[in-house]
Image (cartoon, rainbow over all chains, first blue to last red; front, side, top):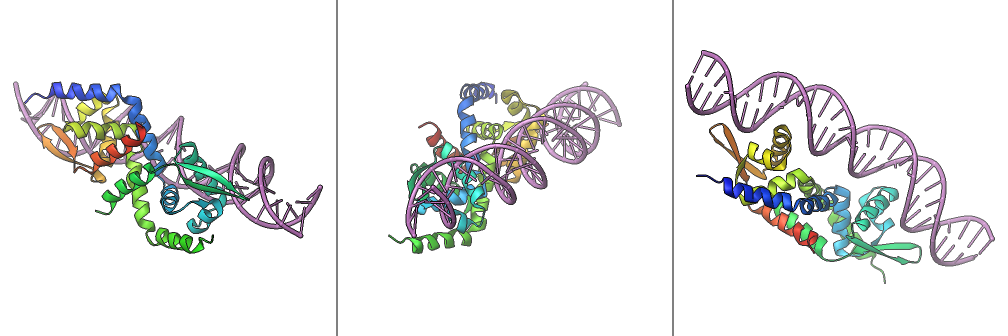
Length: 108
Length: 108
DNA sequence: TGAACATATGAACAATTGCTCATATCTTGA
DNA sequence: TCAAGATATGAGCAATTGTTCATATGTTCA
């Protein structure tokens, strides 16, 4: 059974869409940290300001801010100001979907 | 509007299922590398041996082996021997689903 | 306006990661 | 059995990452 034709077709697909898979890896990199995942999971339940997140994650306010910056620059979360607070929320439902999808595998 | 009740409920959920979200992040960590993603994508199309993967990814055989070891120890891929070759394939369809799910977001 | 609060940011550091190089292990066929 | 081929593995290294500490920025209210 000679599958070299199939193989070169696959190679073609991978090389042609190289940057696409790079961005895919880049996306997963954002979910690849425990703090960020927990932040995102929390935000699927409710919008939330920095100090609230910091409180229930038991990590520094600074650490939370740094992580939120990553999430925001990736357009996974958005912000609005409410007095002294900055309230963070999910940009859209993609985050929810991606988390659910991973959960499916983890909780099997 | 007082949402402190909702917040403490969320905090409860996060802390109670801490290890679960840790494993979730751990899972995404595996997808968080360009080479590994490409390997997994290729394997969604066809089983493949190390030298084949190494060839079309244009990375060292050693590098591929190292990555495959990670994928295998995470139970995302399985192996069988075919003569001198070790043939790698996906363990189940979860990988496909997870990749599709991420693609959905990347290609929006 | 100024003190107190909330958030953001930059530097520094330890930990992790992905690669390369060298070499070991395992299999086949002469 | 032994040389050649295919894969695995360990050490070493440069790059990246997540955190903390110190401090800056921005907002409210007395």
